[in-house]
Length: 113
Image (tube, rainbow, N blue to C red; front, side, top):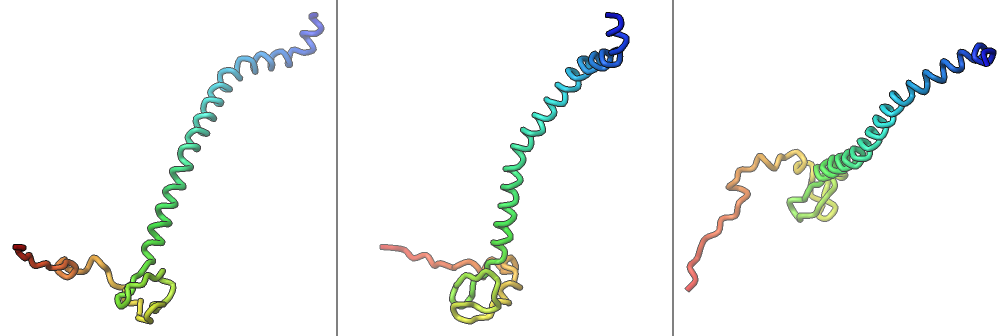
């Protein structure tokens, strides 16, 4: 038996070290790994939703409406496909520059008898 211990002293030493070190660091690694996987499972749908919202806002900002006929254009052409009106002026104007009195409709109240 002593011959076996002398020959395999390094093997026994490394085996004991692994039996002590792996449970301490292995469990910690396993818990960290599971936590990171769960974090990714929750973050990936959130990031995809964020990309969809950004894409929708980008698409929405390119939509123009013709002032003459009211047709909707995706901003790919310079003129309206329906009536031929110039659409470049629409994209340059800012809708927030209008005065509130220009965009509201005045209604006169009438008394019903």
